[in-house]
Length: 150
Image (tube, rainbow, N blue to C red):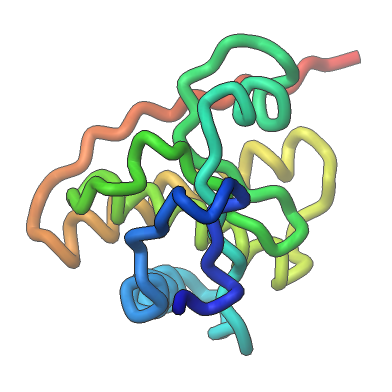
């Protein structure tokens, strides 16, 4: 039986393939590459369909998000990456785990400038993970929007 902290948020027939050990290793990488403390517990990880990301992470606009951290202890991953064990998917998880660590740290506020800083840091650490853990260069496109001045 899977730990309760790793669930799909979907019917029981939808099985999770990321085990607790893999999550712990990737969280270890996020801690190692950042200045954040190791948390007492990992976040919950849930797999969801793309429509969930459009509605919840992208403000109802079509988007290509494959992962999202909700600032409440849950990392959501697109169900299309559930059975994928690739460098990119592991780096995506590290990216979202960085957001989890950022949230726990309390270093960032809800304003746009801080959100951009959070994204920039998460992308930088994602690239560092790919380089250090896998010896590859990562060309990951940053896709956040800039801040509008009132």
